[in-house]
Length: 87
Image (cartoon, rainbow, N blue to C red):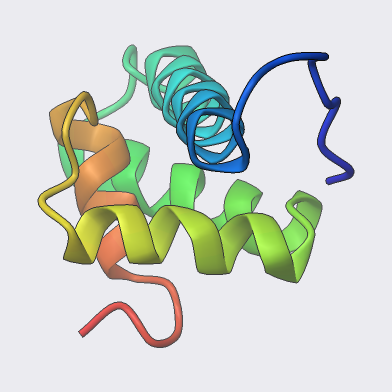
């Protein structure tokens, strides 16, 4: 997704804010499927990320996972591990 630049914010801080948005979105998607059995919720979350997220968004969330995945809840974290280049 195109990032919304905030005047006076460094590129590094802007990237951090963009990552925070992606983490929030991934967690919300995982939460949407939380009524399902855990493995199914993970697969449906990963499927949503594959279908609807821009490749740059997927690459950024995978990179965030590789950097420790701070803030990712269990379903979202497991879903990201199913994306290409996540291992």
